[in-house]
Length: 326
Image (cartoon, rainbow, N blue to C red; front, side):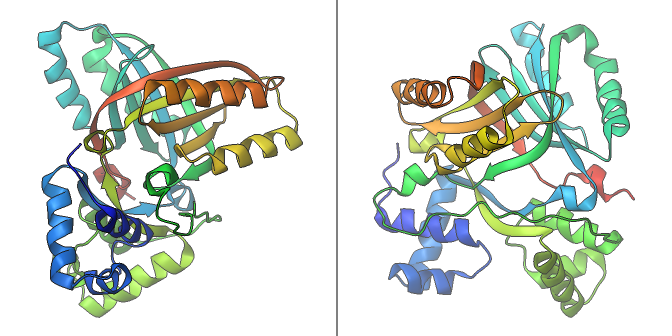
């Protein structure tokens, strides 16, 4: 790991709370000058620890569902690069990760409904069907936890816990709001005047619309996309297959997940009794402890546990180009 100190960790913590709060405010909170904070953030970017800044967007409020597709590939090594580049160009792709284990690839796709998703997947598979061994779809029915960086990373800082913010309901947005979300997803720190130039509105109009998107909960927060590998963490997907849990047991399981310091992201599946977790650990033994703890704590609820190592994050974009369409 490229060495980072407590000041770097405090900067990352404040960026995870709100990346658009301004480096002057962060400087005051961490006891540095604005120039020092700017230098350290740029250094974290050069080291590949921060890949970009982006908003966390509640797509469900916009009537958009997300579908996680685990894929087993059937390709020769020399064919894989071209295949992955083709998939990455899909205009509805939110997240793409190369895996090791039971599955080779995870795709998260945004769609208006199951019919729209089927169309997106069918059109994608027309060109690559012979290179797909098998696939499995998991539909997000409830997001249990989503935070930009695991609590374990900040364990020595005595800082308030990063909260997994939730918002619900439905809201209609227009073409200009969609364009704002699109450009913010490309660069969460993009100045309002620059967004205004791109979408042909005044800076005041952009400011008003952004505040409204934040107030309604469409934009939950602004965060850095933090790469865990340069920080010496390994990332895993864990699929928990459940035995028809009672409401009380499900509530207890969800609370257990929220309080786990290594869980970054978790959702409940819609088509069967399951929960999918995304966790980060320093050592493989820590993963084994987490899996055993879940099994022991929920022995009568968890039927099986499967896990895959995340090798490479190809992309993460919560408002891909396809969502610009009405």
